[in-house]
Image (tube, rainbow, N blue to C red; front, side, top):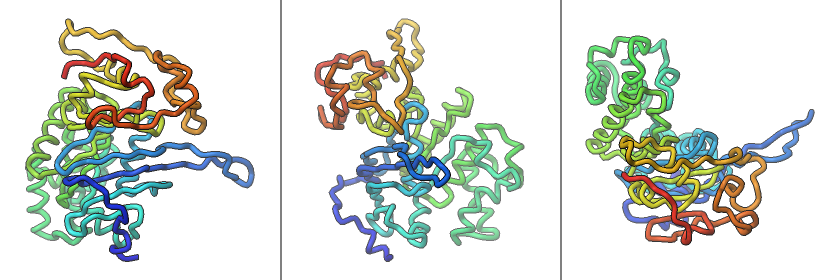
Length: 349
């Protein structure tokens, strides 16, 4: 297969988009019995569509197990999707459909797709020095070696706020926040276009979280980076994301600009997530929303709207008919039958 064969046939994208995902699905088979026959599927991601303009940050949020990490890993081709398109505008090759790429072609594209991992302790090889960790992408891709490699690694360490002389040290000599900076330096080594941040601050102390978010924002401005920021904490998403997509059991429930979503949520699930955001001003108290029941089982989801067993606004239609993700206001997408009639509680940004 040549790269020409991977060009999208239906290239209906907005000007300025870097990544466009259409109807992305990932079903994991459930095998049982001696013969390990497939008796069902876990629909981890079920029909997700989103886009990210170049130089912007999209936050992908939801409870644990909603499919946000699976979505991000399919974009990087760590998982092969069951169906759907992942259109990426490579700086040299133009638009390509990532699932159609073979190994050789994917290697050419992958240098422009990088990831910052959640765990700053488990994502770094304890047997490798900083020079080897940060320099490995440069060495493997034939970008630099020898003294040029050392100079490049020293430059990357300085960019993320670490000293160049640290390159001979090993990960155990650094704190969690410093290790995450090392992971960021490694992700930036090949000057990528898209960086997937998989809950990059969830394992850090609150004070270190703020420093790391500020660093990511500064790097985005300096290098014109585009971020897909995966998180479960909306208070973190508020400070770095231009737009937010909310996921529940493999599906998108709401997509909106960050300020609009915080001030005026349109989906009851978004309202519940916002109610859990800590308020720095004790006078700004919001009514606590306690969701009843458990998160729906993606292997056996309920009929109608997946959220209806936990929704206090649910009506009979919600139990029978699955809502489509639709545009109810300019650039506001929501999958709720009652979006126009509900008055939900937001939080000040």
